[in-house]
Length: 102
Image 1 (cartoon, rainbow, N blue to C red):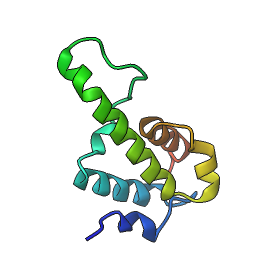
Image 2: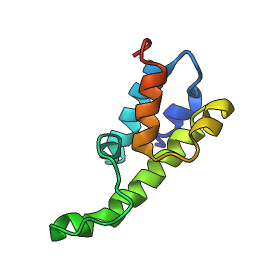
Image 3: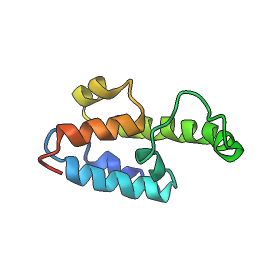
């Protein structure tokens, strides 16, 4: 079963943010990548502690995977506006854009 197909059924447009966001969270939870929407990814690996430093590459990779999934599940004009953002920045920007819907 490809759970990501949930997002293919209805791409994010200017009127369905709440439904899209719920479906996105379901998909990311199943993929164990939902944490990237809650935590900003730094450009540099943390210097301390070692555990955080060692986890940084995975966080960066997961953030890239999630941002690509998010972009692929949006209408083209939203893709153009958000294509250079991290997953965290994208979701924050979308919450601001569609705050009234949320």
